[in-house]
Image (cartoon, rainbow, N blue to C red; front, side, top):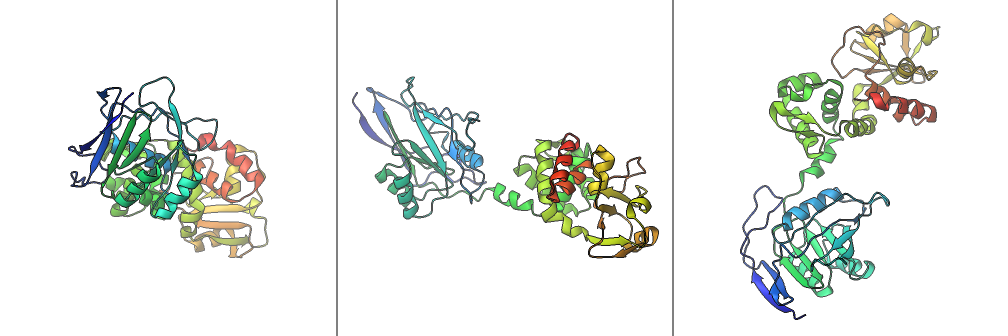
Length: 386
């Protein structure tokens, strides 16, 4: 086999993940080779069957980095991302077959942020030689040249790449850094109480996703502008799809579990929790919510919904002033009291038989208690979250 290297000036624009992709500038180039006496177009000779990456903290979603990198380099390379291997968590195998043989080269793609030459040196020293693919957000021209000299295969979300495999050689450099992915901001939005209010409204009020922005804001108890931002974050996170009145929930169960995980940190303290004790009486016998002014949450609600728990403490969510509840149930403030009262943050329901908070909130209450018996009962509610 005779390989005749040829330098090709890139004449077409590679897709960028930024909102305003710019055309290819001078200095950007791609290199290809002729294999077996015939020219093999770079967008035809490589097919990645399965991507695998090692989990690494401190970077945006690894799957998203890979998806963006595949999209950015797609005009030059034909890549296919299949379902990951479920045998090992966080590990996916990469099969590269540039010459379309039946013996593909297996790689391990490592998703990480690279800003300095020292990081490339570390990667080159620790990664398996000839069996690793570096996937990153952006590779500068200087670092791309360093990769070429050290033989480090990489692709990034801007469309830059260095791929040296038997029968092919592809090098793309100089693509500008794409804008910061919105998903990074979206994940931080989960720490916002307003976003959690909107999520809770979607999960507990069927059909709300197709309502107008003003109706969603009213059902969530947040401002219209804040609702728009929360919906954008949920779309970036993959929990919501469609626009205007064609929205629909995606992965509702995963969305519910995500909400329950963030509720104790981002929303609960905004509900003015305060503990009380019952004056001279057992609260289990005297406190009876009417379902309109207040409802049970926590352990008591779990007992009502599952009949599988003897509550040790009481928790009320109320739409009424605290003074009204103190007078009605003969309560007094007590930091060590057995009853906790929080503000209700969803629309006031009509009278019900159960007089409990929505099962999703009860589930979040139980999981936040860090109690084995409560966690066991919470699992009984998992099929009632949405």
